[in-house]
Length: 404
Image (cartoon, rainbow, N blue to C red; front, top):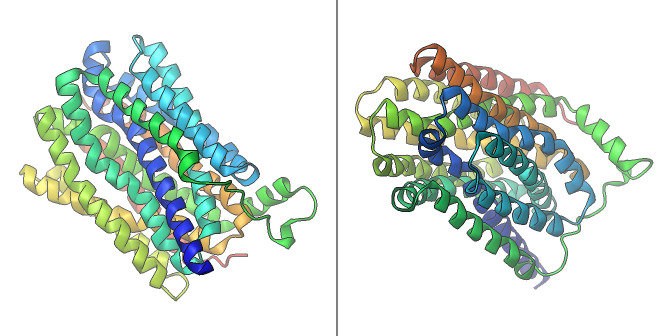
């Protein structure tokens, strides 16, 4: 009976984390579709658009390590609720901006507001779920991003077509605020996590824990992996809508429907990856699988650029989403399975910093590449492909690392 209650409690916690991540992802990603209309209203060039994209990541990346430390120290339910409330307010404020300066400030603060969510959520999952279920739990949590990719294109393009980009931000901010206010009523009691292992209990726990995280070579390699992975993910997410609109001449509504197809592949890939990761027995298999997946991503990126038919493009884009899924699951499950629970928040914060540095760099870098090449997208695709190869090398190197 107790096991059944614990299982039900874990499922409820995971459901709430999923809803919060879905709301956060939608509010974060909406600007990728709004940028087409915003660029026309504010008269942005490619570099200015990239700077707006990067402003969010500047705040987000600065908050990753502090966010991990907060996740290790404070009541996670209150922390997560605070993140969602402030995130919803900045979503609404984005719709109220009228100058590029105001937009940059709001997006920077928005990034800071959301920076603690992922470390806190991953710490909860690592503590609440047994190791043989971590892959599936992480895959379900992270599939919220795939669901976002499925819902958001149609929601954003339809809303903007009939009511404008500002209304889209207002509606999404209101939804996010509603989820945040319901959060404490859905999850009863606190989510105070267990104390650290006895080996870490002596002395200044925060200082010792952080040093122990930095001493783990696996954390450094996963930092590099996250950076390379997010070069591809954020490169695709931030510039593909503009690419499809300008280079492929798709209408706003058609663009929205084409963008939903890869989300289905991502959702399936996430869940299947979680099952496979939980069944792996031999150490090092995860790194090999993830490295092969990244190499496949490099091939698919080239095909996305070179194919002519939009249907073939959609197929390649869907397969890219499937190929990215095991990399996302594996880089998170390695930390959750191998590190002490007291280190998970900080370790996630550090590896996420690598990913968000990519988010900070890639929009401006790709915007500059396209401006220098007079709007040609080949350089942008080659930029993503290069980091796919580097990331595969880092993942293969994890096979030789013996964790403490």
